[in-house]
Image (cartoon, rainbow, N blue to C red; front, side, top):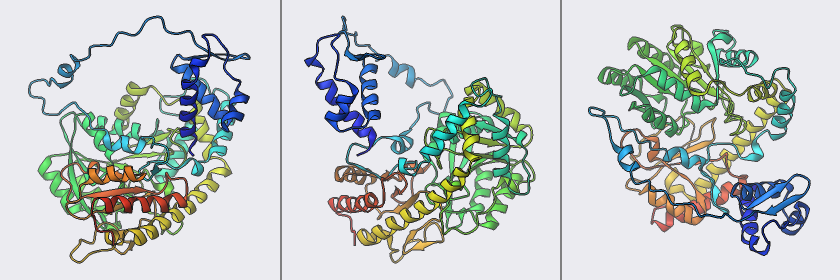
Length: 500
């Protein structure tokens, strides 16, 4: 059982038993709770903290936990009906809705119910996260001189220099002064979109693409314009057409292990993307989220687009979060030219700076031998997990993953039957039979005990076909992955879908 599940269960047990104690009466000790419920000290501490936050329990250092005094007056329910008008009223001439659909993002962040296998997550399972290395790095970081002072708004110099080497490659095309440290990749994407396009402007996006980017674009008042992809990444002939038709001055791309397709932008197209964007007088936001999630059997990785960019066309976004922990929200924005000043201004206005101890922890982590060992570990683990899921899909759902007569080749070159098997990242993109009701399948999968992600949120416009995205990083292990696919098969059978 996941610790987060046991915390909630213990909190529910303690909450239900509070009536046995008078206000001010002491609850059983932490040691007694550990022995009685067979849980860890951390679980007890967090469960009690949850009850403290609810106002049901108070703790006294050295004395223990006690039932809180009851509230003397019930809170008056608020009448918030007026907000429907305030949130829906749009200024005259404003054609960009202010409401934001974050369902695609929330699907990857939601905590599944106990017993549900998580095949829709966006982060490494805790067993794959470098918890010991992070704890050691955090301890060392806290002792660094000035760690708890105010850091430079652009970021800690050593971390900026490290990102510059990582992004620019051995050619050294990037200087530390070209890098801003951000609070993760999502924060960097938000700053870049706000800096590079005014409200109401079109922004070209890959189709399909990352729902978090679509949500950020729409929240910033931008109009995402989809550009289709094929086996080699974005269709550059259609990209040129889209620039001409829309008048856009911005294109957002994930050239490496694209989310959700896993495609890698082919060599000639890399050059063509830069040429087309430069001809349009446009910027390219390069979202390089998965470079540190490469698999053991991957060929040599191409350099970043920024490393090949001689004209300041590319604004690069990357992060340490995906390869470490959801809570190590440290990323980078890299750019050259006057645009960097605008990016810096947006970031300062939004968040001032990334907390110094977090940046120092990142410096300690990436500078330690544990960092290289961790990257090797997750490369092997992700490869093994990917292969287990692919084998399970062919065994349990052959009708969905093996290419049918007349079916398009799809996205990606490395294939198992009709399924693209990416050499990096943490997910598979599964095309469903035409006419499949994605929402119904997601619900059926949930009833069967497995959480999967619908394909619809990954498209800026009407999708050409129904899809599922399956993550193989967030489950507890290969056994859960196999069982998750088996449960998905049961969900498909419930809806009458052909499974093979």
